[in-house]
Amino acid sequence: MSTTTIQITKETKEKISSFGVKGESYDEILRRIYSLAVKEQLRGFLMSSENTVSTEEARKEVEKKWPRSK
Image (cartoon, rainbow, N blue to C red; front, side):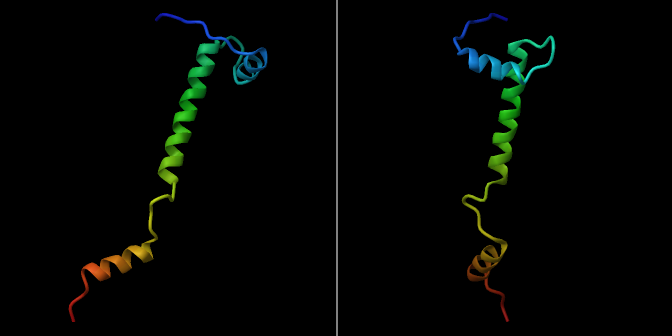
């Protein structure tokens, strides 16, 4: 795998290293942080109540569209 160099401040480097354990490379730390961020983003998406309706609202809509025959 090829590598690249990125420029970050010493403060950022210290913050990143605080997530690591002895012997862990910055690449390993950043990959782990990225994986956690993706999982958190997915969790946020799945748990979001945006564009949702309550079960009561859904029942009312169903009753309007398909009323029970008497």
